[in-house]
Figure (cartoon, rainbow, N blue to C red):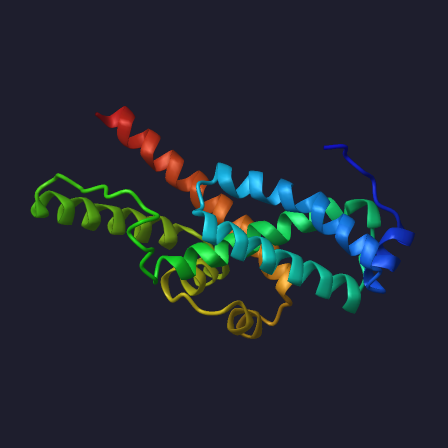
Length: 190
């Protein structure tokens, strides 16, 4: 696949629903999105759903608001895909995937050991959340524990969806770094 740079004229034609440009845009980013999602091990039906939703959101944004930096459209498609995949992952956790698509992997540990590990993990997560800023703690809790919609969270924090993605990215990175430090400290203590 040849990589292409995008300009304002291309995006104007995309916003104007030029069939040739729409087809090119779809073909160009479709395989890139598939490769990305396959590497994250999404099932085939999920890849198609995420890809379709990504295109829908990107095209709506291009037609509604335009893109400030046309040469950054690839990064915009990529970040939109990341956000849609994250939403899909959260929603997928609430819905059972058909057995034909997921291998049967059983946890062979006794119930008491699984319960103990789950309790320990919850304790670690709570301890890390307590060390985080109030804003980050409330944001992560709303998204991952309460599983509230992005619209609700944006209203609560008084922000738009794009800034929510930025805040969530930062909060998740802080959480991950704190978790890694905690794991390393626990290993050193052993």
